[in-house]
Length: 336
Ligand SMILES: NC(=O)c1ccc[n+]([C@@H]2O[C@H](COP(=O)([O-])OP(=O)(O)OC[C@H]3O[C@@H](n4cnc5c(N)ncnc54)[C@H](O)[C@@H]3O)[C@@H](O)[C@H]2O)c1
Image 1 (cartoon, protein in one colour):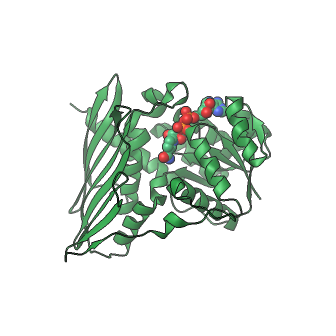
Image 2 (cartoon, protein in one colour):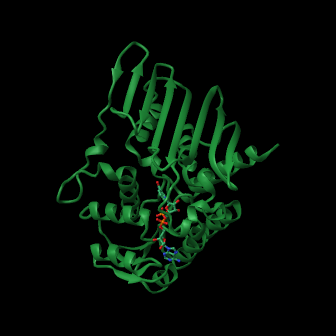
Image 3 (cartoon, helix red, strand yellow):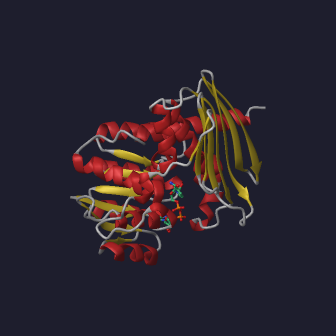
């Protein structure tokens, strides 16, 4: 049985717990332990599963009845926690970004090779239905060659973070590593790797990169990306893309209705209905659309572990490569 230790019971830990509840009956797994600095938060999530409560990541990894660790801790704790979990022989799901810098990425990858553990990074946009559909259209060559694209991820300044960790660039990597990395990772997966060329600019406030703009060139294709969270708290979150192929332009915005439209060059407008949005949750049915890619990625993770199949999507290598590309953007932006 896959015995999961969920570490971090904040915003993302609660989201993962909701996914595990929705996934009940879809595999031989159980959340057996939950850890958080705040015992009340840990106890609240643990009660959903009858899981044991631990006061810290270290205690859970060393003492818990677990073989799989799900890390939903602030980003600056990913490296130590993922390392400890791998050393204990556990398989690992770690939230994005995988870690904060090149040195940590190198060491995590080396440790994974040494321990032969399975490690997946929560680059959930690869599993978000509308982005999966875009990837399918490109991979199946439905509308010909991809010519250009615009990707956007903007949000109000996040107010929920434990001890304000998101606003300390040393701890979160700022909007570039926390928010924009989602689009960087998706574009890498869509276009098959790093761009041939890139430029980027950041808008810094109070010592942190609140906003980043970048431009990639892949052969003939041009991709522009915008990511930032320096907006007022009333500003609505939006993730969006607009991608043109030879025979159609595909447009998605989480803020629009319908969210996804395809404008074919011959005049048709298509509003695809995506099956993934109506997967029923567990044995009891119900709609999991609010869990989106979080549900799909954890489903994939558990399926791979259950089948003894190697994780092939959103691997630790993918997560580290996307981190590196984002760091290249930041470096490019800081040049005079
Ligand atoms: N995939 C996504 O779309 C997405 C969205 C939000 C956050 N994230 C990522 O998830 C991770 C967590 O972010 P969050 O928003 O949930 O943060 P959060 O601040 O809401 O939660 C962090 C939790 O960690 C706990 N904690 C702190 N130190 C601890 C320790 N030593 N041991 C155990 N618990 C400890 C805190 O009490 C808090 O409950 C980050 O890496 C973030 O980038 C991903």
